[in-house]
Image (cartoon, rainbow, N blue to C red):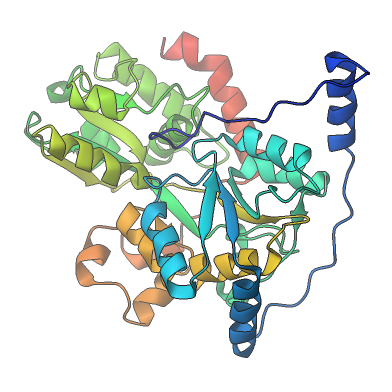
Length: 383
């Protein structure tokens, strides 16, 4: 996941060895950490008039701890800075590059401790086990009813404050034209240029690139086969190359066209500019697909009111608009446009709001099915 631009590293704490021995103690700790926690009942959405009271309670707690939210990801650097300036609450980010799996490990092993993260951000596949183990506490923010159903848990256990779109990033200093669609990607002029950010059997970004091409070629969220076949044709024509479309490979020009999430593109553009290259991005006109990440409050959060205020900040507050500067789309994007809060220049860089309104994000079941199909066929069809 995505993020030097990857969120892989996790700094874990070592368990002290006691009389039981390291192995026995570790097994006992792991068993204890897997015991489901009781989850409090969800309250109705916070009334807007109660926000000042929430702010005061959060300021009294005096701190907020996040995990796995690196500054370069979806503009979290500016979003966190804005929160601190708006409310005077210091924010710390544990293990900024941690994976979703590592975040759940942190919640299990730090339960009941003051260093337990208040808020996590994980991929959709990881909220299911988190809910099953009682690791999350419910909260329905003040704009809850306006958030699309596929971007929130009905019981308030998580919310997706933003999503990204599969996009093309092009080194225009080296490439003459930018493909506007998947159909245009399949052109001899792009031979040896195109890469995804990882292997689709391991990378959520790459998996969704295959899915996006499937949608452009007659597939659906329930049928990824046309995407597998399309990448097979790209590979046979040597357009698609088996390299990772990360910043390093973009800067050294081994990859000239990157297919990745829109919220990875701004950091790539900055790195390319520092190396003297122009880097332009575009969302394909066909096969538009989005991916989300889920924010959730940990069960037993040391600063529960600050955690709730954070969710207010990134859903309906000014923090939500800052996602746009990081290439991500806030959950309430159509509403923000209606309120006149989104500049025309930003709107022109994204698909029309009526197109986005029809966008359906893949469910966990659809993701599992598509990922299994790609894993079974990739070597044979794509190589």
